[in-house]
Image (tube, rainbow, N blue to C red; front, side, top):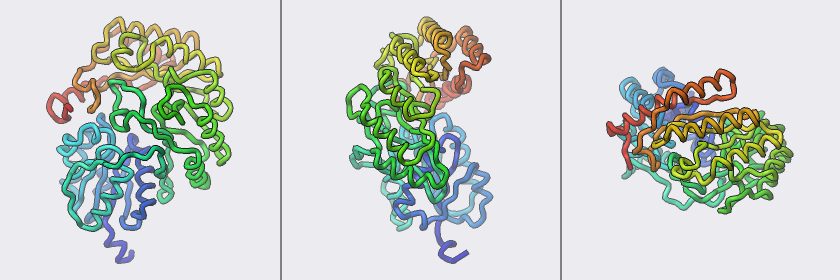
Length: 415
């Protein structure tokens, strides 16, 4: 090993299932900024893996995580600070750090990145290399965001590829969701030329099954209107095909579509260009009164109509429902269960069930979940056994109440 290599500080990312789509982007930005040669970069799947690495004397250790992972992250940082010899700076980013930066500092981090990190992380790393101190422990990107997404979506150096993020921002104000609070209410899209450029980079490395990240896949190309921009969407999908993609998947995991953006024309485009057999639809509830309180901007009837269109177009509706919202009544749940039953029976739908978890930065964060009644749980378990329902709703129920405990103890701040 050369002396130059020995002198380079380490940049260690804690790799988890939850940040598997984030790390390729951050590493790609570091590569684009010409910083990858200044660090010895490691991706570690556990704190033990970091501790066992020999020769780590100084550098940066970075975590990106969501609120349900808070306790594990706190314990891991404590373990690393006790066991890892050397001079290290601990960074935190991601949805939880953005929602509660002050509380995240108290978990044992030196610096917290609130909001989008594609510019702030490389800027921080340059300052770290220069040895210049930072006056602030909470770092935010103060620049006005570009109207289009142009940062790298993957890391060629580490051969890490994720679904392509095509849209940021959300036009809606759902009271339980962090997305519009983190990324704003203006829609920013990755243009087809940019998509083509990065897909052509990735294809030689075997990336031929293209998926996309978007809060609402059918909003691609829209700048504020609340209906699909068919021309923009077709240009995107045609560009992917022309770039050499063998399998394009649109409107499915890790994206979903809103019911009020579904129509036969947009489904026709998906049918023409894509290989997915399902379309993921965000219904969330079968109760119109609850949907209105949540600020969803659509009705249960619109969700059923969208699911019918999806079915008629030859796709299987894979429909999201959330149970346990604050203030949710037994009647609200019965309406959701009735809508689920109708979608399964009539349309062969598969249901993706969630239990509400309070998330910092959202209007509902101060409100406790409602307790799921035995009849609701029995119905969900019955559909699980028939393999027409999936999701982590049981685990989320326990995590939701744990988040309430952390909030009430002051581990998470109420803003």
